[in-house]
Image (cartoon, rainbow, N blue to C red):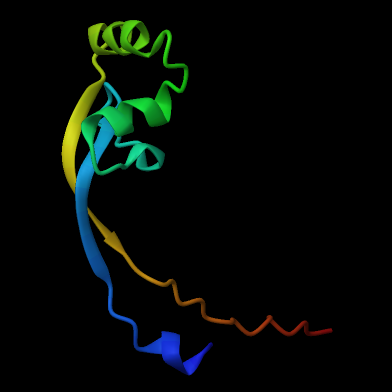
Length: 84
């Protein structure tokens, strides 16, 4: 790992994300503005508002959220040795 990256601390951000009726946040919709979060899911500007109203009728919500961003650290595992 690059030495310059190894000491990078996590950062936090706030924004908006869509939430499914079951309570699961859709991370791919995380955006700075509510309209941008909706646009991340419903990308056709001509039908976006209509589809968003349908989604809300089915229980979808727009949530104000905080997000933590960090660089993942992966650890190499040793393969198990086979015994005969």
